[in-house]
Length: 217
Image 1 (cartoon, one colour):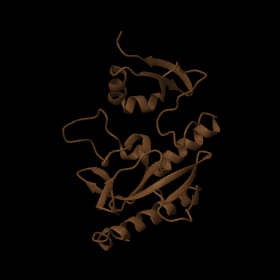
Image 2 (tube, rainbow, N blue to C red):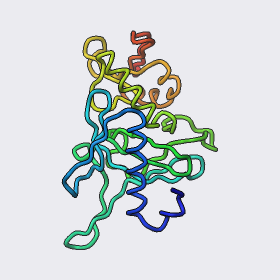
Image 3 (cartoon, rainbow, N blue to C red):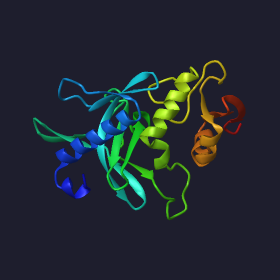
């Protein structure tokens, strides 16, 4: 299906995104479940990393080197249309399909809760910014599923889809965020900002702690 077939029909775009995400999840060997009741905030339930993930599916656009996902919904209420966003009580993740890049992406709700939109970078920003960017390749459905399955096999999964970091009670100090060395290198600016704000980051290499980033005294 080409994007031109759905540009003027939001319902068709949503249905096309849901079908594309379900097909990609099936191709990856994931369980794909569909709720029987209507009016749920999630469209699909995917079996990932030994758990079930409630996914709201969105049609995304490619714009200026990024996959842009609109997270605002409208519904008819007693006083007209009501605009709202998504919360962790309603869904576990946002699934997005971008027809321009033929890609399916999965974003943990904790990263976008309450936000009106999110951008996943396909190419570096023109202004050279790197801190706090979300790179599309890290959120591809296949990459997220592989990471979740690997961590499940290592008995390290906590939560539904551990995209980048997993707190571990046996090794991490209380309140620490655990992140792999590769992820830390790719998102150094983000973790630097977290540490500057009072967070503590435990960095692992091959599953073992190798360094710790702490806020200034």
